[in-house]
Length: 262
Image (cartoon, rainbow, N blue to C red):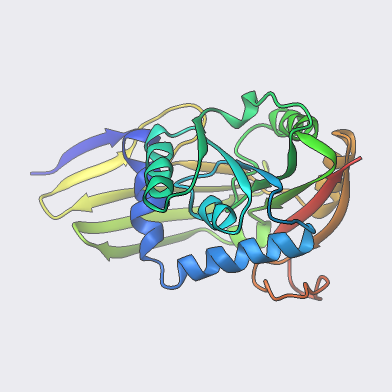
């Protein structure tokens, strides 16, 4: 007999997506190191610089920064992820500053050399809230401090798709689509365990497993950065993290934007 269980982002989905599932992706830790090397290169960073990692998850990229000699402050709304991040930093004898919090509520004043928002974390909120977040980030940056954002693009969102895959204790079913009226990537997932239990997302505000992410174009982001007191520098694609960084290529939609505090 089927049993349905609704679980919130922090109760289940945050750890499932950001730790359990992510760490099974072949080569993911090497990709993290390659990404941090790329950020270091395009943003002209040096060990000792202070990094603000918003939506830091379990601290995988933060750990790479720390191992290279950067001072990292990580913020995530899910206590389970912050607990994991602290644990892995302790196991690797790395100092840490991880805080449970909503990135929309940050209040820093000229403290960081760079703010990173990775893995499509920018765009979870309304246009107004996303704009305010950029202003808060600008305030958190030192003079000429950098912002590095990884986005979900319209091309990545693609057409409506339904997929399933077998996991350790059952099956995971996903549906994703792009909503043209709101310019958002949307997706939902649920898990059917082998004992017949269905785990589905619990309705909640803020971060949730039923994703709704605003897909911004580069011109839109240029205007938003300018309005926030930030200057657009360049855009790249995460499909090519080679160093030296390559300019935008024809037919490749960029999903990385770099800016600086004016």
